[in-house]
Every structure is written in structure tokens, then in C-alpha cells.
Length: 315
Image (cartoon, rainbow, N blue to C red):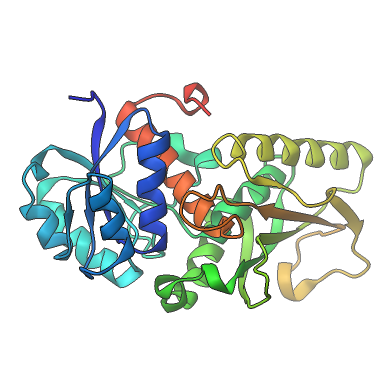
């Protein structure tokens, strides 16, 4: 008996395997009770078996049939948007809590540093996307100082770190991220772009955030920069490789961009360049897009099962 809450991971690909390893190495509150896949030859299932984690290659039905399934409190779904819909239906009769790392968005969007406390009781929470986890905190940091009529994010990830699930969900990525920029980040209108960078050697994840605001005075600028820096410190508590690439830029907008923000006043653009270096638990450091998703999901799982306020969680 470990005293930890039992958790299962569905999806034995890059994201699911990285999450499993993080849970085994880092978590003081969660125990990996099962690794679930559909490919018996997957590296994720092989690693799980070597690490002593119970496995099944029969998908969610195999999970339900595993001995001890009834003791599992939380399930992390690292499959695909369509697969999560089926998995959620299969697990609904058992009342299993779910953390969704796909863009399915059946439950509320959760970005730990922004709105986790609002959704600790939700049966199925959605982790948005890697780009959303990296950029929405910045939009929210600006929005808590001044209204944001429009926010646009560009997430650039190494092509080598984009597995089949990511590639199959590009449309869902842009739609889900844009929606969460508005509902979680607080922008009136949001737009998201993802770039799969084929450069060799592979480049680490980089994200650019643009927010259009009406903040002409020096006090506004100082408040915006201070809020962004505070938010970066909060996110880096659970994603150590999350950082500014260069200083926050606030520049005047010459002409009112009416096509983006209708008739709302806009005087300045806030530009934030970020990079996310992975911890290298499963893939190399360039895979920051994996790391921020699994790190954020782990933080949510620990908060939900431990019932411990975020500010009291250990780094």
C-alpha cells in the first residue's frame, strides 16, 4: 500500500509514455496502476511492463477488465480527440474521473496556472493543447490588467516531436486553442496557428503571443509586464523549462485593425516570445510540447486527487 491515488494512462504513444514516466519519477500523490494501448508492440507498453506497471493492449475495454480497475480514481487520456469521446462513454458508468490530453474538449478547459481551482470537481477536464498550455497563461496575464480585444498565438514545435495523434488533430488543435484563448485566457477574440518545424537538428518548442490592447500609459505597460513575469514564474513551478525567450515588447499600433477587433479601441500590441524546453523524461529536450502537456496534466491530477490547493503543491 502506497497511500497514493491510483491512476491509469490510456495511450501508449509519446505523450502517454512521457506522462507515465513523470508520474513514476515525480509524483508523491499518484500511482500508475495501468498503462493502456492498442498496439501490443508499442514502446510505451514495453516500457511499462519493464517498470512493473500493469498493461493491456485492448484499449479501454481492456482497462475495465484489469484486476483492480475499481480502485482506479483517475484516468489520463492521451489518445486522440475521437478516441477520447469513445473512452469517455465507456468509462462514464463507472464514475471515473478523466483528464483529457486530446483536443476533444468534452469537459471544461483547464490551464493549471489560470483556472484549475474552478474545475477540481469536474468529471472530465480538458488540457486544451500544448500551444494552449504555453500561451493562454500569457493572454490571461495581460487580460487581468487590461481588456484584450484580440489575441493570436503561434506555436512552433519540432516535427519529430509531433506523433500521429498530433498530426491527426491539427484542425482540432487550432479550434480548441482559439476557443480556450477566449474562454480561459479572457480575449474577446482568439486565433491559433501551429507550425511543425522540420529543421534539423530539431528545435525546441517556441511560442509567440500577440495581444492587442488599449493601454497607452507607462503605468499600464509596467503592470502588463509585471503580470506576465509573475505568470511565467507560476507556470515554471510545474514546467521548469518554460521561460521568456526575450523581453516583453509593447509597441504602438499605427492604425486601428478593425477587421480583428471591430470598434473596440486598440492602441498597443503586446508581443511575448516564449520557449519550452522539455525535461527529457522520454523524448529529448526539444519536445517541450510534450513536456508542457504532461507536466500540466500531472499537476491537475495531483490537485484533483490530493484536494490540495495549487499554491501548496510542491514544485
